[in-house]
Amino acid sequence: MVEWIISDGLTEYETAVDFMEARAAAIAAKQARECIWLLEHPPLYTAGTSARIEDLTDPNRFPVHQTRRGGQYTYHGPGQRVVYVMLDVGKRGHDVRAFVKQLETWVIAALAEFNVTGHIRDGRVGVWVERDDKPLSANGTKAEDKIAAIGIRLRKWVSFHGISINVEPDLDHFSGIVPCGIAEHGVTSLIDLGLPVTLNDVDLALRTTFPQVFDAR
Image (cartoon, rainbow, N blue to C red; front, side, top):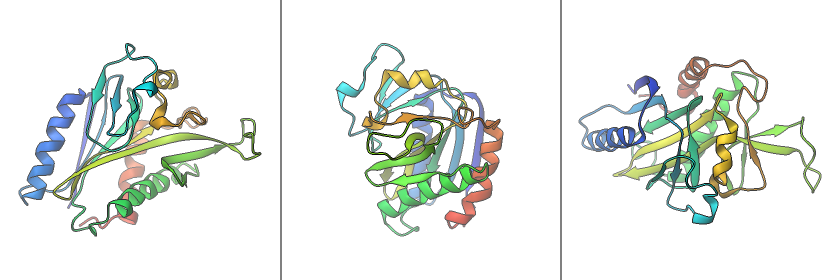
């Protein structure tokens, strides 16, 4: 069975990376169970393998960590549930795109527990919500904000890094970057949407919906 770990307080980014790399190696060697780790980080920015320096608009605001996960710049901080997924993608089909789609589907299922409808958009990795309370876009479609980011890395077909879901972070902290390189859309959170949801509520939703999307063996 997958091991679930929930950390209280704020976990330093380097500590998390060291743990993930060691655990992923142990999973690949069949010496440890798969693992999902739920935590919070202190305020920081991470740069993925596709990050463009011009998207780091305030480089002195928070520490910036270079990381070899996929994607561009992201923010992590208090009030955001970070979900690190150390799963054996090899036994789950050897299909990276399908695995990312599963992660997105998992987030959407968890959001549905709070009657929030998440969307997947072509060319925009992550999960998005439509905003009825904002003006329509220039082409007449509903405004959309990002509520969850996804970026993973694989080593010997074991994943690490993962998902971040905005529960109650300081949304102004995102202004120091162009989140995921997408300037034409904003970011939101469950609290920003008017929902009195806690990190514990999100943890329960994630655990409840995980078997709906993944083979939990």
